[in-house]
Length: 95
Image (cartoon, rainbow, N blue to C red; front, side):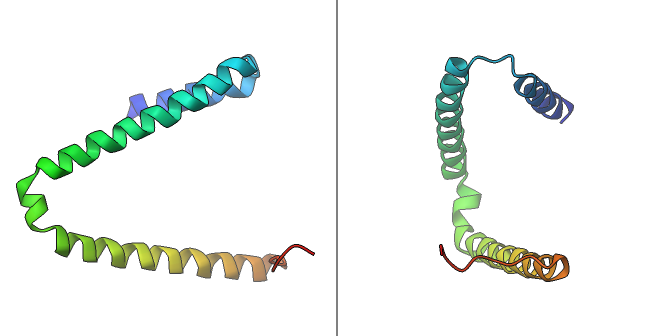
């Protein structure tokens, strides 16, 4: 965990310093996207090869859906409460 947080902090520090040229930042964006797709592919392959997990996918999928729906509802409720507390208006469209 320390390696992950250390890498993130180091990257943010270097990025914030402004010493990274724009041409490298554009390549980093493409590299990040490709790396993310590769990690998702590897995760999918690992999940697909786990026979016990695949046997229980419907139960786990239902639980995951329930958790996701409650997380979304909670986020909306907190956003509403904070916006009311701070007196922020939520835009209903471009005027």
